[in-house]
Image 1: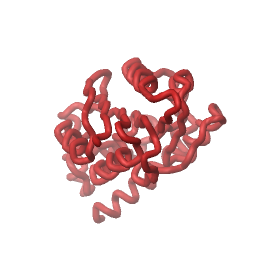
Image 2 (image 1 turned 30 degrees about the horizontal axis):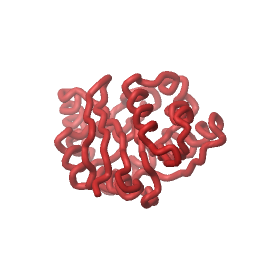
Image 3 (image 1 turned 60 degrees about the vertical axis):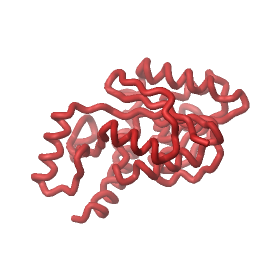
Image 4 (image 1 turned 180 degrees about the vertical axis):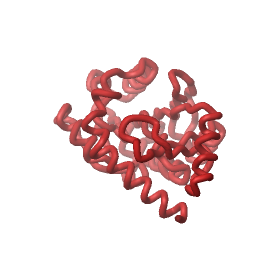
Length: 228
């Protein structure tokens, strides 16, 4: 199978998995507690947003970070490619505006002061990373700010998963894992763990300036500002 066709299938199966397998159990298994580093940075970033500004939660899932955003008093909305996750979010926070949009198709231009994208970019293919960062850059207002997290995986595990995929004839690239990592992935999942050099290159190419880079609790944390 050609890689382009394989990627289409993986994206479709990922959406189906979130819609039908993970959305009913997400809050119980993963959304009941928020990592303190994530929470602290989201809180701080929300309060840097102008009082009359707006925030986009990109790949918002079930609204895990929305209590923080609501407490900040700033206006915000959420987008996600999974209707199942959006339905769960709407049931909890019916006042929040939602749209079914993937990160790759983000249509906004000069619309937001702040964008957050948490616990999601490991699901983005390497071919799509530049487009996603470009979309974030276009969607932000002048001097707008972006915060996203990148999951950390042990280098030896990445090597083993890559070699196993190659041995099976799967058209993967280094850093991709297509094997089960948790509940709901018994038939295989998808994660991509880019090198930090690659992420920094993508950041520079997209026109962002790095304000803060931190590593804590199995994630790299990037706080960026839109370049003029």
